[in-house]
Image (cartoon, rainbow over all chains, first blue to last red; front, top):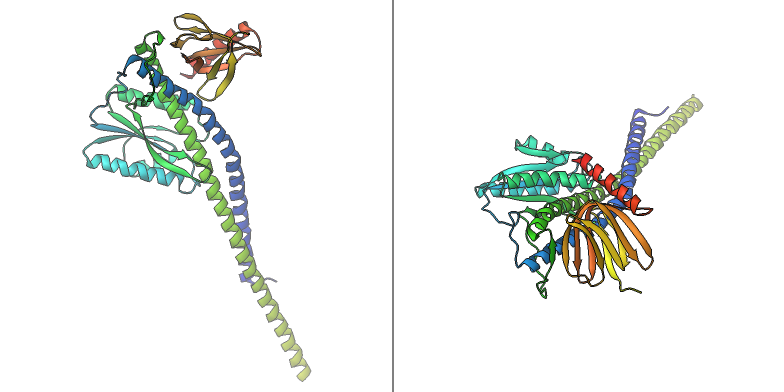
Length: 291
Length: 108
């Protein structure tokens, strides 16, 4: 008959082990998804790279660019978009990007600029809502596997806000995927669009435009925003999976360590129990022999 | 053999085709365009339609919906919103393009 102490330790071992099963499963799922997310990030790069090249070529051909989306206005109101995940258990992933964003929001306000806040992901939504920030628009359920339509939807709302003058610029706070081990929270200026620097040896090319350069830019720039937004969502998603894998790996290792310690304690308790029993028996036998 | 040039068909999600070609035909908002090597630098907006790429290794057709076409230094880049390689002839590619347009209309 096991003592109360021993029973309690065994119950804890069982509970730690079942937690470990969950964290290990989550680790494996995240590992599987990083690969896919990483491949999507890589596959989406040529589009934005080519887009940048095209804009640069138009600039070189038409001798400088003028378009409402390139115009730098006085920043009276800043649009801030924060990209986080819907689910937690991803270590410092959400915390770091939220901290970076909030820091800059406070800075803007201190400098007398108004801020309009937009969020992607439940984590940013609950964080900022709890702190009584007004949230203009939120997108949920997109960061796990972002589609181009998600990127376009977000880009279009921000573009509308900008074109209608509700904001004079848009900053995006998101996480850049550097490698499986490194993900960096970053600020990215989405609007106004910073025209790409002309290549040094660029000679003005006599392009034939069908239709006119203005019309091409009108069509091109929104696509460019959508593509950039989509690229950022993909990187954020890859970062989320990488952060989750690391967090779950650490949790699994902690659980393993805890099981080892608890097993040792259980063994000690069992030994102590046996020792007590033996000494009781020996004591009883001696008492009988003496009697 | 005719002179070849590089062609990339790129969508936001991936590069769907990339290689050498002798002739490319596509549909722009202003009308159909046929491209041979050493074409003058051109920038055009793409309409919904079929793209045909005649290469040394055979012909590839694809349905595309919207985007841009850039011809620059003997490099043709089709930056499309949506594109899909057709398994069959031009007819098939046109049908694909129409399907892509419908899919785009549904999303917005």
